[in-house]
Length: 220
Image 1 (cartoon, rainbow, N blue to C red):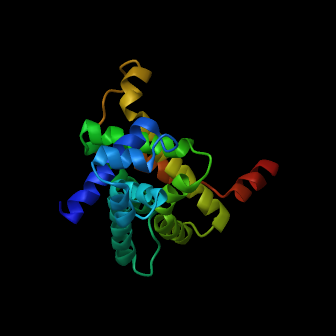
Image 2: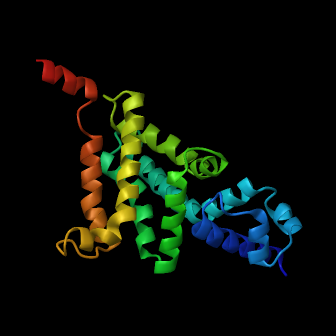
């Protein structure tokens, strides 16, 4: 069996078991059995359970983050030394993720389950492996937002970035439930329509006055 094919079989098996049993309930031995390989093969390709889990995340999340960075690169090149548009930064972050709405049902379910399991973890190597996938994205986008929003402190920029992340994750997680939650008012929405609503909503929050400015206004 070709090395690449073996690696993909291991990743497929690991992903399925993680979806079904979560991180604590998934063992290397179980992954090897499901993939039809021996333990030595998993050690050869990945070295450890943590490295395998990181590879599972990278396969799903990596393309999204690569597209985010590509779009941000384009935005920064177009702006040159001028100001970066907040809406453009928001779109560069949101658009690739909403593309996941175009995945088939089984692929989307896998990703949602992985996200759900990860977010529910208090801490540990599995959560660290997931967060590592976003390290460059966090750095690049917070720098870009700091450039676009010079009146905000670095601390507030970082918090607003994570508020953007939370809004996007919740949107992806709950979009399919909206017809039921809204009692039919909000039907199934495609990625393009969702983006038209979501980008200006997030951008408005990012551009809100700094916390210190609001406090001063309240005290006046």
